[in-house]
Image (cartoon, rainbow, N blue to C red; front, side, top):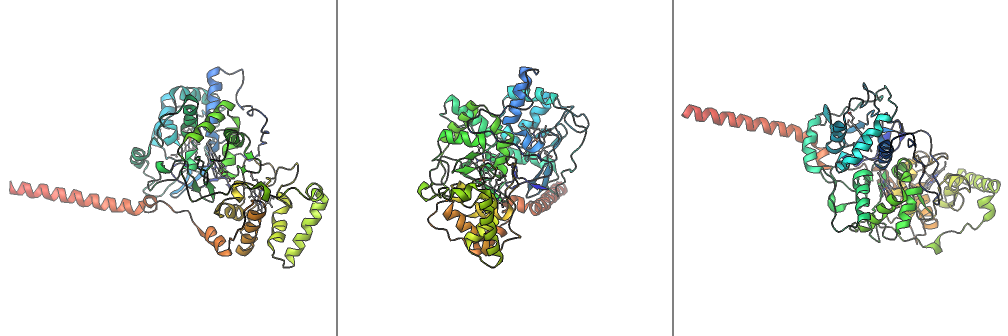
Length: 484
Ligand code: HEC
Ligand code: HEC
Ligand code: HEC
């Protein structure tokens, strides 16, 4: 299993993917225009090509796979929900779907013979435009049919296996967003992309007690299993208020913002499958809209980049001379195995071979430079500690993946490395993460919202109450008859 972490809709939890793209994808440079769209060709009708673009912009591939055969597990507090085959296979896919069926699935979460779980982001797609659904339908007919069911099938425990319960959930939580007043045309396009196609809020908006969006905290950040999707409202201290619109465009196009931010894990997936393919005007519309949403201040504050505190790639010979670097790192490793537990030696031994002696990574290799990244500048160390504990993996990366270190390093050592990285590469004035903090973060299981945690119990109580009420009514009827 490949810890992947796409996003999920009702279930604010990370995800594990069994069948997402195995091969890495090279990201284009910031200066390059959008990556050319696979599946778009002059041989296709204009409608089909438009549909291919909608599929990208709505990121169907993040869950259904680049070949649309499904099988991605979306981990939820209620159990794993698997995406399905949506190729035109009559037997295993959606070959029998009419356009109206697709519309119902996307907008209402209703497949022809069952209700869907909101792991399929229909609460967002509910606002999809008719013409976009028509184009998507035309395009999906042209995808090669694959006559195979995904290996795994969704099998949730009672009461969640009663799919019609979703009717009640939908009543409370669909649509997941409302249109904002006072937007200009560009921002309206951005709103449509963010809310209805890209469904950014499925990861970036926290959930309420019923697992629907907490609308008052729109886009202000949420925990996805071991990943944290940060606050992307324009708040200066905890959001992306300091980013220019161009910064947002560059990040969504390339997955990187030099010495500022990196798109790892689930965000890397969103960039790799979707945003890097968007037209410039659409990325600009998203950026313009993100600047127009209400700023929400959260606890997850992030220090501004203090360039003066960041390392300069001082030791050119070590940064650029691989052999010298190798020797230097080997020396650190030897020191660590001789019991040197200094944070610097630990960093060099555990991280230096990929991220470089001073955090600028290996020139020309596709490791992430980590100098100045928001993930090493946050006041809460949780996201960074989770990355060190569990590793970082995403489709945007073609170099050896970053392993998790929870087995290899103890909490004391991880705390030391965390402090070293935050101060030396994040530019923080100080950092005092302790072994106890690392233990707390490692042991925090994501809290399930009340209704989900106790739904089994509530459902049983509900049934008992319902039986009691029916019994009471029957008795009352009998009594009144007897009296009559
Ligand atoms: C975040 C993950 C995710 C994304 C993104 C997503 N889906 Fe789904 N989809 C699922 C899951 C999971 C299911 C199965 C849900 C269930 O079992 O109730 C599903 C089910 C479906 C179904 C119902 C198939 C059937 O069983 O009859 C259709 C149709 C569908 N998706 C189409 C799409 C299209 C088109 C897109 C892009 C516009 C898309 N999905 C994007 C996760 C996703
Ligand atoms: C599948 C879940 C998911 C989806 C969908 C998603 N994001 Fe993210 N996003 C994340 C995660 C997780 C991070 C943190 C990445 C990291 O630190 O490596 C992130 C990071 C970001 C950042 C960087 C913030 C910072 O302070 O560093 C921005 C900006 C952003 N996302 C915008 C968006 C936009 C706009 C969309 C919709 C087009 C979107 N995201 C969709 C999960 C997601
Ligand atoms: C085997 C190479 C390798 C090692 C060893 C390694 N990393 Fe990484 N690291 C990566 C790669 C590759 C990425 C980018 C991941 C991606 O996009 O899939 C990354 C990403 C990161 C990020 C950025 C995450 C984000 O999304 O903001 C941080 C921070 C980081 N690593 C810190 C560390 C620390 C600290 C250590 C040592 C405990 C370490 N890494 C060890 C390869 C490595």
